[in-house]
Length: 64
Image 1 (cartoon, rainbow, N blue to C red):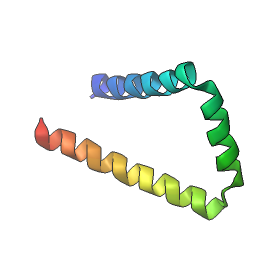
Image 2: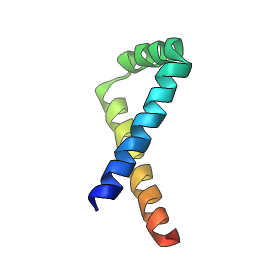
Image 3: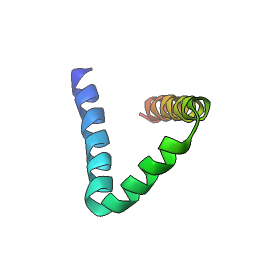
């Protein structure tokens, strides 16, 4: 269980790190865009991201 959590956090750090390493100016553009969204829009995006994450985790378990 702990190994799986560490594996998941490691993958997140790899993806986030690649985004910053390969396109730092695009990250700044995205942050500016996010600053212009309303709180409701940000919550909706967060809810969609969580839902998609749950679906991916469940799919990975089914395929395993």
